Image (cartoon, rainbow, N blue to C red; front, top):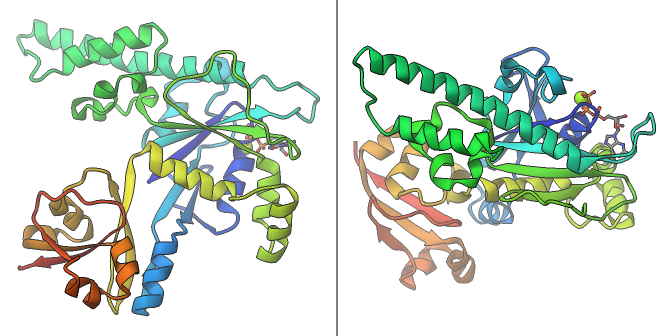
Length: 347
Ligand SMILES: Nc1nc2c(ncn2[C@@H]2O[C@H](COP(=O)(O)OP(=O)(O)OP(=O)(O)O)[C@@H](O)[C@H]2O)c(=O)[nH]1
Ligand SMILES: [Mg+2]
């Protein structure tokens, strides 16, 4: 799961990136560009901890989330934002938008709502350009006698209508999830999480005049959380108490990321490894098997499934089996959040 952090210059993108990756993130150098930063963060999960205590495996693997911070001062540099600037976040599954809700060092009052709509417009304009370019191409092909092969054209026309009205594609779930359109990596089709970046002593949610639809919105005190993320756990706890923070921004953002992307976790367990896997809600067992290894998918026989809660109740896999709670499921079975799965396969 990869999320790109965007916002206007000075909104606190670097600060939020540090808040999200500071405590238990690892920075990788996998970026496409030198000046881009990618941080990988472990997803804390009590269930994985529990399973790890139960199985005492050689290795415990938590799920991971990746945050991408595009090159500084690029995305959202207002007037001359070119396609290339946005291209950095095209590969992301979702976007995190940071809105400045603190007085800048220069003393400028925050204008988070105006900032939001400014970037929203850039995003839809950018998508409109992509869509129109493709439509022109299709026209040209038609003149040469090459008809459109699928419903691409009608889908693009529907996109264009939305975008021309300054509407993001994500408002139309058919368009935003269409496999035909996937390759265009339209920005406004991506799920989004809006972070209102508040002053250290301000916990309040922004009061919108015109609240955007279909988005997750949360308040984060970016600088405060960045500072806390750099502290030793003991000291961090004191600050959490003092500033009335229940969950670190990092964990709240991860939770929202799973939500906006419709992601769930299933687990594999054993003496060698206890591991959390992240999949899309509604993934059939056969596909989930493929996440682990193509051989397991190819040779799939059955999935032996136990719900995490049932394991917790029974105390062991064996007892859960005796109680008849371990189910044998076929290829089509929709994996549920918290399933512990043994795949039976034959190659
Ligand atoms: N008071 C306050 N200041 C903040 C907060 N977040 C960021 N800042 C300050 O705002 C300034 C800009 O923050 P950055 O994180 O560098 O913002 P950015 O979006 O990465 O900026 P550029 O990359 O320069 O466009 C810095 O001086 C931060 O210390 C916050 O939550 N509260
Ligand atoms: Mg920055």
